[in-house]
Length: 285
Image: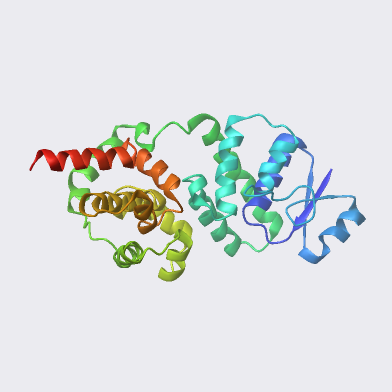
C-alpha cells in the first residue's frame, strides 16, 4: 500500500511511516511530495494521504496524526501509547505531554537541518523510533543510574559537591514575572501563562516547564491560586469585607468559585475560616 504526505518531514511524518511499517503494513511505500501536490499525486498513485488538513489521517484537537493511526487501526500497546505521548508533545510543542518530547524535537530538528533527502532521513528515523519504542516497551521504568555502580557513584558526587555549589540565583525572567504577578494581585487584573510568555518573550512551553523551579515548586495556575487565597486570608483577617467582596478583590469570578478553590487549598470553607478567626481574636482580648 502507498502512503503520501508533505515533503521535508521532521517528527510526525517520520513517526507515522515508522508506525505503518512496523505495525500496519511492512511493505508500505512512503512518498514525500510538495504540499500543493499531495492530493493530486495521491489520486494518481492510488496512495493514502496523511498529516495534512482535510484528510482522514491527520490532527484532531490536541492529538496528532500518530495518535489517529493508533486509534484507527486499534493498536493496543502500552509502549506505543508512551511513544504517542512523546510524539504528540514534540509535534505540537507541548512538552508537558512527556518529558522526552523536547529531546525528540531537538533530535529531529537537527537531523532535518543536516539531511535534505527525505528518504534518507526516514531510514535514519526508523532506527531512532525503533530505539524509542524499545525503551517505551521494556526500559521506561529504569533510570540511567541503574546501569551500573559507576553511574551511581557519579550521581552521588553530583549531589554531594556540584549541586551544593550551584548558584540558586533566579533568572531575570523569574524576577520580572514575580513583579508581573504582584501587579496582578495589587490591581485585581488577570494574567495567563500565554500573556506572561508574550510579555517576557519566552516560549510558553519552556516557561511552563521551568516555572515551578522558581515558584515554590508549583505550576503557574497553582501558584496564582495560592497567592489569591493568601490575599483572601489577609483580607478576612484585617478587614470587614464580605466574602463576595473578597472573592471579587482576589480575582475570582464569583463567590462559589472562590469558596471551591479556598476549600481545596485550605481544607475548609472561607465562612468557617472567617468565623474561627473571629473567635480566635475574641479569645485573645
